[in-house]
Length: 95
Image (cartoon, rainbow, N blue to C red; front, side, top):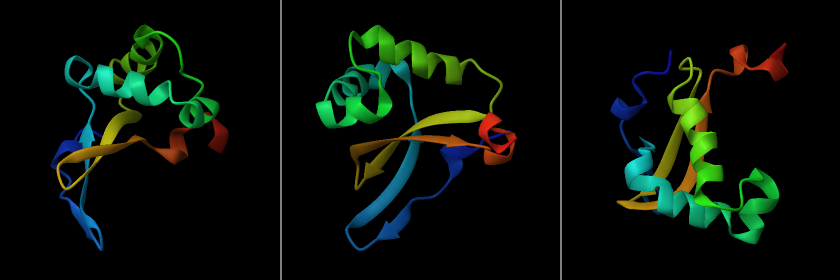
């Protein structure tokens, strides 16, 4: 469904090139777990705690049906945000 996110080109913004890069747990889990344990982030995502908490959330998407793709927002080569790209029309909230 969303199997080509990794081919999307960067978007040029006033502060640099922003690209969405699909998460690879082996590479990205330490960074994601650190972000999810930041109090400001934890209040929204509710994924604080051991790295396995974040890993389980991301793994469910990576091994799921393709309706959601976890991505890093990378600005000029520096990871700076976490995104979940999904088909809104297939999301349970849309029903």
